[in-house]
Image 1: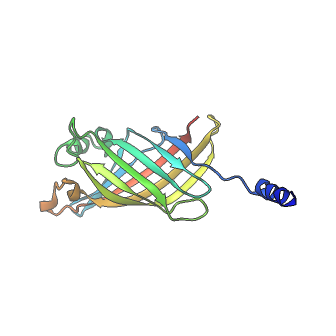
Image 2: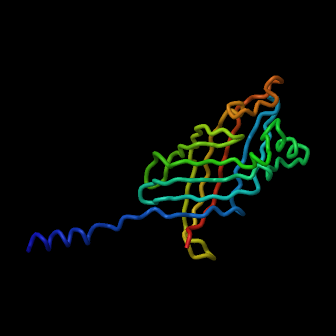
Image 3: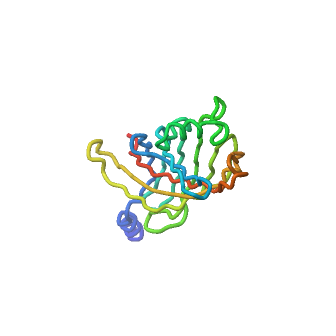
Length: 190
């Protein structure tokens, strides 16, 4: 009986283990972006104004996953002509059959409950290929109005667009390496 009492006391003294929480991406505070070379002269940066998705995150272990759906028609380079060109077959090849890009990944590495990277896959132009993002920051706090947990993160990586069948400008010397940056804010589901 004494052993049972010690075991019960030990179990009660063990700190509670945090469980993974599902967060819904806030599309008004989340704007993934692409950064593409312009013949070696400069880089064009375009943000995607419409997106959705979710994050599952365990603050205690840093484990979790992310899925972000990006509406390619919402690309905004700050120049209407560039936006129209980017929606065309020479850049994103936007069509009824190909309106979205999706990034899905799982958190890995890191310490103190903050992952170091997201290992995942990007689906673009009907192809799905591995893309790893480096996590630059991740912070959570109570949302001041919603009174639910609120997290924000910034992660980036790169991919070669010709691997996705998008090789516009390659013959003219455009670099095929494209930067992908996903900055996200998400609120815990009720």
